[in-house]
Every structure is written in C-alpha cells, then in structure tokens.
Length: 293
Image (cartoon, rainbow, N blue to C red; front, side):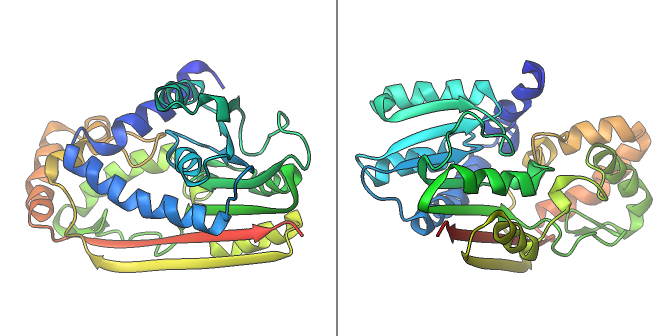
C-alpha cells in the first residue's frame, strides 16, 4: 500500500467523517465513547497485561485501555503510518509513550507480533475493510496467549440492505429516484455491493469465523434499530461528510455523476427533507468477545 493510499485513513478519521461540522464531530464521539467502553469491558483488561489494538485509527480504544489499567502496555497497530505517527504524538503528550508500541500492520498479517504474546486483542470497525476476514481472525488467535481475550465491534452493513430504489440514505426521493440512482452508482462502482468486504458478512459470520479460528468460548451481542433520523446535523454536514475512507462525500459524488440541472433538481428535492429531519436510520452493530482456551 502506497503512502497516498494510507493517507485516506488519516484524512477520513481526522476530518472527512465529520463533514467539517463540530456538532457532528461531537455527536460521533458521543456515540463512540460508549462503544470504546463496551469493547474494553468485554476485553477485561487487567494490570500488567498487554493489549493489541488492531486498526487503532486515532487511538480511541488504545488510549482508553491505557487509562483503564495503569500498568498495562498497549500495541497500536494500523496500516496507516500517518495515524500511527498521530497516535505516537498524543501518547508523548499524555506521558504514556513508555507503555506504547507502534506497528504498521494489517489485520490479516500480524507477522510482527509473536505467537502467544498478548493478553488482549481489540478492534473497532476494522473487519468491514478486510477481505481476508478468516485470516484476520486466525491472526488474532495466534498472537493471543492461552486464556487471552478477543473483543471486537463491527457495524453490520448487510442489515436491511439494499435500500429500495426510491430510498436514498433513508430519505424517500421517489420524484427524483432516477437522479438518485446515478449518485448511488458512484458509490457502487467504488465499493461493489457483491464483492466489497463491507457487505460480505453479518453477525452469524462473525461467530463462525471466530469458531473456525480456534476460539471455544464466544459471545455476541447484536444491536439493531430503525428510527427517525432526528440526529442529523443539517444539509451542509451531510453534503460534506464521507461515510468511510474509500468513498467521496455526497457533494463530490454529485459533481461526478450529475449535470448541473440534475444536481439542482436533486438538491431542491432532498435538502428540505434533510433539514426537516424526515429520514429514517436503519442500522445494526455487533459486539463479539471470545477467549482462547
């Protein structure tokens, strides 16, 4: 992976996922902090233990682990050297650098980590980007000590997928459905629904993958919801937010797919729905934790 490809992860995590909107950033963090806490609760990290956070990103779980156990040691693992550098700077500022290690590695190739060497492996929204999920789970199992624990969080994007043709991101756009399909096509081209790792698994697959990797004590909690989208932070935030590191913002996708006339018609219809908060959220997420017996 080239540096320019790695950069997409840091650019998204540190800026593009929030749409340059402070309120949206706060809302995202308000959602993520309980996720962090639950992942760490399920991990049951103790003092003098070593935790490997795979796909550490900006360090949400890793830094939480350092705060949870004062004598713990944390290995930050990520494919983005930019993000590892960012986390290392934060660790130095926090005065915890001596308890940290930073490894540039993918979830499905942790060869830099020895067998049976860590007490806990954690991930958050990592497997959705990994095609070789079976290999990743086998790697998690390999690096764990006997009685080591795995604790992960993953969105289940297959839930209620695909959207009906007249629905765009939870909004009924029937009068401009043909235009909406052109915008959807941009995203489908970048992340083909029939082959992209974001959509090739659900909660049952997570259990199966963990079991095949060798874990014998496995727990899973699925959370799913369908509700009015009353939490959206306005049209401008929606326009400038990228849903994940690999895709464009809505504004960028519209510029690529639509003529000026089509774009005007699409915005004229969709923007009032967004501002009136008339969308629907349909989402699911899974927590899995397991022990290497």
